Image 1 (cartoon, rainbow, N blue to C red):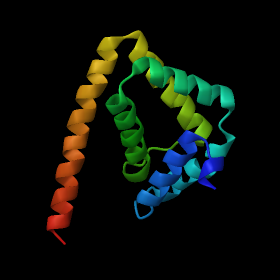
Image 2: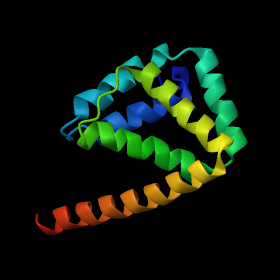
Image 3: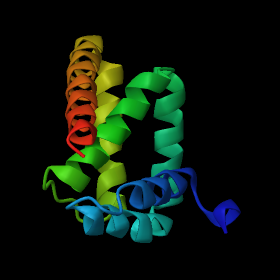
Length: 126
């Protein structure tokens, strides 16, 4: 089945499983269920932007942290097409303005650090 999935669908399905016990698990699961409907032109745009950015950490952190927002922070997204469209808009901004990309990298570093600390403390309390 995974071979029939588009790359973003694979990522969303992986995270839907990963966040299955999160308060916003239904939102991430909805993204995974609707990911097959992402139009090819949108997927092509994302692939082009990711290649042009050539920054795996920036793109990966952007995706992961926006999914964490859905899973744990109550952020609502209509469906996977909306999620992919928003990702495309952010990637375009990163390409157009390196200062925006730099600010996002710094924000992501802080947020990843915060989540690591929060999860570490949660496991200590068990």
